[in-house]
Length: 380
Image (spheres, rainbow, N blue to C red):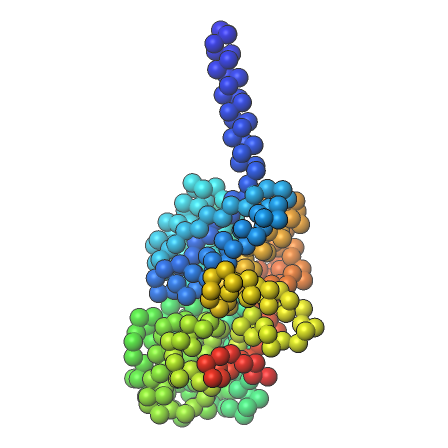
C-alpha cells in the first residue's frame, strides 16, 4: 500500500468517525402535521408546541446530553402529501420516531409504513382504528372516540334523555365516531332515532337537521372537526331547533367558538382538562402542567392554547420520556419504553401504555364542558 493510499484511507476513516460523532450529538425526531389546509387548526398549534418544546429542552441540555432536532413537514391536510412526507422522514431523514399526523384519515394511511421501518409512530389523531387492533409500532395521544361517546351518553342518561340523533362527518374521524355511537347508544339503554352524515366540505346541513327534527330526538350528537360542526351549530339555530346539542372532542378549540359564533352558546362536549385548566382544583395532578403549558404557549405565540397543541405536547414528551427512561434513542428502544410508560401526566390525561393498550387513557381523561358566554366552562 502506498503512503498516499494509506493517508487517503486514514482521512476517510476520520471523516466517517466525525460524521458518526456529529450524528450522535443530536436526536432527530420527525413530525408530519396539517400546518396548513382545512385542518390547520389542528396542525398549527401542534407544530408551534413541538418547536417551543424543542427550544426549551435544548436550553436545558437536550436529551441525555444530546441536542433535540425536530423535522416538521406540512401535509397541507392532504393524505397523499402526508404519505410522501412520512416516507421522506423514514427513508431520507432517518428519524428515530415520528409524531402526528394531525388527521385520523392521514394516520390510517401511513400506519403500515412503520412496522417495516421499525420506527415508532406517535399519532396526534383520535380514531380508535389507529390503536385497535394494536400495531406494535403505533401509539396515539388523544382520548379515544369510545371514551368521548361514553361520556356524552352518560351525560345524556343523567339528564333523562332517551332518544338520540347523530350527525357525523364522512371522513376517517367521523366514520370511527359513528361506528362507536351506533354500538354504544343502544348498549347504554338509549334509542338511536336518526343517523345522518355530512361531507367534510359541506357548507349547509339544513337537510340533515330537518330530518333529525322530524325524528323528535331528546338530544343531537354531532361528530366532526371544523368547519362542519360550526355549520351544524349555526343551521340548528337558523331552523329554530332547541334540542340539546352535543359535540365531540374534535371541536375543543377556540376556533370552533369563533366559527360558530353565538350559535355555540350552550353546546356541551367532552374535552381534555387543558381548556379549563384554571377552573381545576389545585390538587388535580394535571393542573400545574396544564396551567404552565397554557401560559408558556400564550406568551410565545400570543394565542390561546388548544387541545390539539396539547396532543403535540403529549406525543413529544412521551417520546422524550421513553428515551430518557431507556437512556437510548434507538427506535426499537423508544418503542419498547413507550409501551412501558406508566402514570405519565400529559395534557390529555395520565398515560399508562401496555402491549394491549397503545392509547393509555380512559374516559376519566375527559371532563364535560359547556360553551358559556363565548368560553369554556366545566359542566359538572
